[in-house]
Image 1 (cartoon, rainbow, N blue to C red):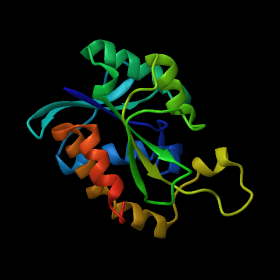
Image 2 (image 1 turned 60 degrees about the vertical axis):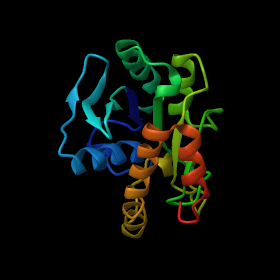
Image 3 (image 1 turned 180 degrees about the vertical axis):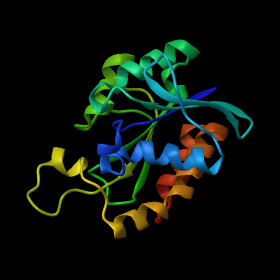
Length: 190
């Protein structure tokens, strides 16, 4: 069993924003598989399903980004999951728009959602899929930039990456973090 966590903020105000790319990906995967999220006692919207012959829990914490760790730790306890079985999907401003990078662990890199997970799980050693949202081209504060919505041309770039993200998740589930990293991170189109 694996827990797939998309990071984001709940509510229409944040829908489609750069910071919500984790939510957007899980919405894409759920739509592709005709699955529906439900509210859980662990402060997350969840789906329990079987994909690729593996039991998966898809989760979108509704605690807001900076407190995502509370919901994820609660889900990990509920399903008795070790950190290496929790795959976190989130935005990364240090990657170019649409660039995808899978990592096995590491620091938060200034991402408050990831920092919350590290604090709540008590470890940095959980795998992640980082999705590049780029940096602001002007002097906009980063906090304001990540909460802004994608432009139409940016949405098109990201829409083209959704199937590659699905492939990355599938490789992670079926063959492990190292295989997923080696394949996805080496692709020029990633």
